[in-house]
Image (tube, rainbow, N blue to C red):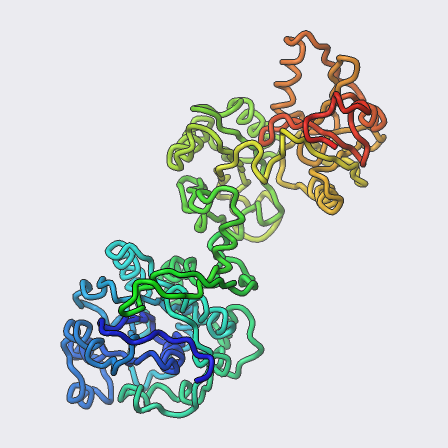
Length: 610
């Protein structure tokens, strides 16, 4: 096997890879994949006889032969089988159907030489394909027979007792992207990836298959690789992420079962290779393949040497997490409705008004030491916006304050360095429509906290300052959409922000319908000329809480504060320009439309402006 990088044998007991899965989860194909490794011995469902002995009423046409051939002592199988059958190979791979592990002594699974893989499949596919082998299993599809809840229980147990979370693989992703998924899987297991794992010969494999293979493995025997498996019981189409072929209506019982098992699948899938942990429900798989680097580490399989070279894989998921300015943001608890939820589970219904028309109002809150900046003013404006939009069943001030401080305490954010986006949706609708008459369930409060200090990548550089351009679009007039309603309808803000992004600027300065400066797409704006501080009238902009604070502070500093119409030319000729906002505080502007702000000697420009 030219070019194969395999684990060398040694005197120690072999590494045992336990793969746990539900039925109909591409498990046999995965077993065949590992069987092609020259360093691995595979074992097909060694707990099967044990499970059948514990469940004597379960029908299997080969039960008698099974009992005559294999041990029914499940604990002994797990304890002794790996060391006895590895045939000189350093890795033993055991395929297990999770329901067969009922009642086993799990302590043997916590041994250092044991590694665990969880192979999961969308439960809707499992439900829809359940009847294909009904003449063999003669079992109803149920929570117990699918086993997803037991997978979650075992996952939690292994994580707690070993300190290592099992590796999770989604069978659809494995089928569609075998090289990428297997590369990351092997890296997570501490073994090198082998090209031979991508294919296997067609036909029965008596040296591997259990004696039940002729009843179950016809499709597996017809396959020669992951991509040759059908995506459903009918002919497969071109691979697409999580293709689910539904050929008939689900029965009420099937729908109810799907409701019961889906949370367990979602919990496991959120940890699966190829699933972005920051957005596990995305319709798009992380496309970037894993990158590798060779370093020397102890991977626990060197048998006689504590140090050996290993190709370390940096996964797409790890790269996604690196995009966070603060890794703690991957684990924030978010308030949704009336409770806290982990980030990946924080979501609203597709019937929510924020989805059905973007109908929600919001506020940004910045947390300083033991306090929220201008909290009452922000809550007042939230209430004003909700009133203007005629929201019904708005939460009380006390409820909102309780939710805010509960969220802060739960995330350990009371000492500052955090920002919260507080959104109040009109709530879920009884049917899809923009019409508020269908909102019969009340509003939904969302508080999204993040570790986001001033100067964070999502805010502004308040030391160097920022560049602005002038947007081609105009700020909304109150006769169209009143910007004083702090609403989620932000098209008028997003389009100029896109323009600024393409221009390499931080934000875009927006003019009103008569050509006077209004604000930027995200902040209020001020300018200084001859010792006087100016800001545009708030007729076309949101009069920000920080803006109002600055306007109150300026006179106390002995400066004159003027609110009036201001032209773009006045901003170009200003001695100083700065923006204000709750998230970014006060941010100096050193350039607008390529023009330097301040005098030619740079005296009025912030440090770093050029």
